Image 1 (tube, one colour):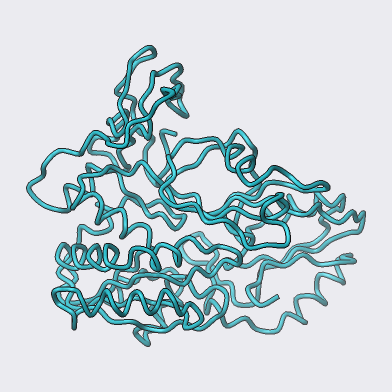
Image 2 (image 1 turned 180 degrees about the vertical axis):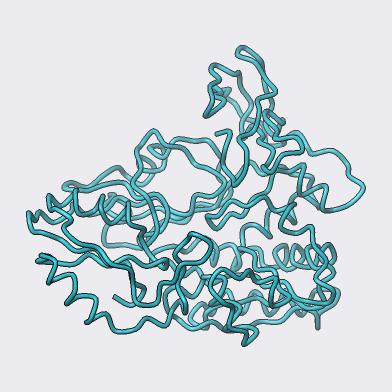
Length: 392
């Protein structure tokens, strides 16, 4: 995929018929806002269009990869590696970290607040040392004095691993553990800043206003790989679950370091295939994910693959209650259509305010009662309500 990030689509550097190596740079954004794209496999280019470079992979894949070039500084290594925010936003990491915090802080967001996602916590359990070192590199790049790892106390194994890694880190007093409440959306940047620093950001304000940068666990993991291993961003961590033979009635399956670009259907098959009846494929988490297909592919921002239950059939007239914390208007309408219903009314959550042409939640995670909104929707003809407010 040529656009797995915020910014311009990458421009291909290869042609149909070219042989490529695992880790090879195949597309770049140059000086534009964006991120480099590397091949996650060795093989041959079979197609190129405006969306993707398609590579037929060799039957035997090497363990090694083409390393990113030596760089004068670690920020350049992050740029060459093509790292973006792995938690879903996809903002190019080299742009985000190109700032002077002047003694501020880096906050590692380990909330994993979407239900059924577990891959960030698993990464912390298995490789906390590398993630803590990655935080150290980002702290040096941004001139941050302190690092905080924000995690929920229920994730005890991850907390123990992180505590040991912090103790072993060369500047062991610089990185500390902070606890997050077990609520949704604890992983929202403004919630993380509020809980870790005690600063209430206004809607639309970035963590920089509090002297902080918030970064996802996997993003920091990839930073460590780029700097220490010269590894480009060619693999992804994610969670697979739902109505699949291996996961129905069991825990979801966590996949770590999987090649970017592999079809979603591969992982559905790897988990035993669908259990019928089943509904749509959800890519991402259940609250903010999108409807997908088996021929969609793993991207740098993918967090989950879930086979949902079928939508309940209903020909009712629906009202939709929209909040920034969950599904957007388009997704709520898609759900109603999937049920066979009709949207006759809509309203924003009482906490929503318009900032710069975008609706934002005033206090994410602190949802007010919506009785007044529900009555308004009912007066407009709604017989049932679909809501994306965080506490509904």
